[in-house]
Image (cartoon, rainbow, N blue to C red; front, top):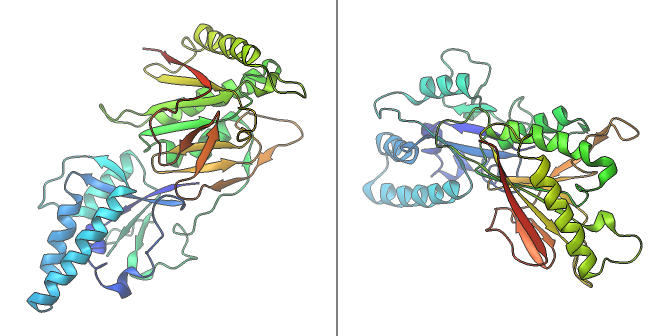
Length: 327
């Protein structure tokens, strides 16, 4: 899965030194299992530069070059980071405030220069290596129950601003409830622990392909199946959605000679996962499924259009969509 790490500005302030940054280069961002959390936002980057100014001991020309490298790095980190909006006074030390935030809405771990309170979730940047518990993360087998799937996605869902679930077989009548249970649980997790104003956009992309036999559906058949699926969603989903949540459902059909709509994904603005056997809950012959992190700019192509991570605007093509909300 993808895990959120709070990183002390004092740690990042040393990353202008190639030796100090070498281990952490490429460890955060899209296509990787870790995302750097900008906390507090606003003010985190300003703290990084302030800590750099206080700690750099080189010549004026060396300082200028090092600060420029650090400023470029901050732009790169910002582009693939999550954000925790919270006002923290500049004079307040970072770690105590981050530990308070962690107690309210947990990060996966906190990366700092010290650990005066012996917090088990604080990692010391100078001591971290590839096998350090808490730093070492991986995608393991996930049980195919709604709760287990939502729990495995939770580290990513709780700080993503955009979420796109992609599974072409959501509409199959005989297994509709298996997908629905997972969808509702994922929506609950995506909306919990958020502060006022911290919204999340959720879309579910599926297809009419479950309705075909051996031959592709005609355009008219595809439109009829898509209309029925969207009508069912409009009739049944709003009253089942968690209170205060919204969902856009998009139904696609494959174009003849186009890309096959088969793989299942969960794509967000901070990364995504490829899901081996689907998002539906299944208690029978396949009790677990295997997931893997999507590479940077992973693309799911359906109906001649693309759904990407990082997320793009709603695709246009051979599909129909409906927006649903429960207040």
